[in-house]
Amino acid sequence: MSTRKAYPLRIDATVLAAVQRWADDELRSVNAQIEYVLRDALRRAGRLPPPGPQSDRTPSASKGDSHE
Image (tube, rainbow, N blue to C red; front, side, top):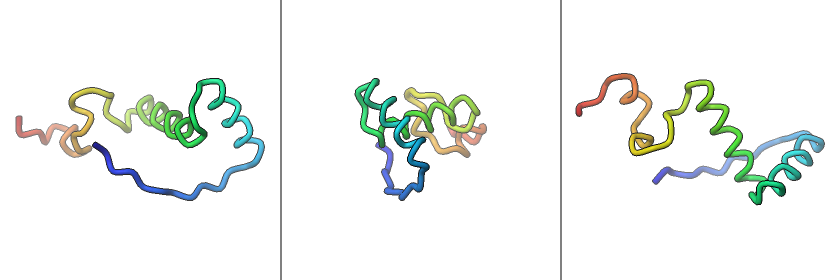
């Protein structure tokens, strides 16, 4: 299981309202929606491993340092 950290976020009121509507549409909290959007963007940019059994590997292990 991953460690969760609190992080204060300053956000424009208009952007927050749009995220709130989006979260409501998808039955998520604003926090969960922000995390979902960030994870999706990170995956698309190749900065997070895809979900699955290997997702708890460290970033250095995903670059071929595996001892499997």
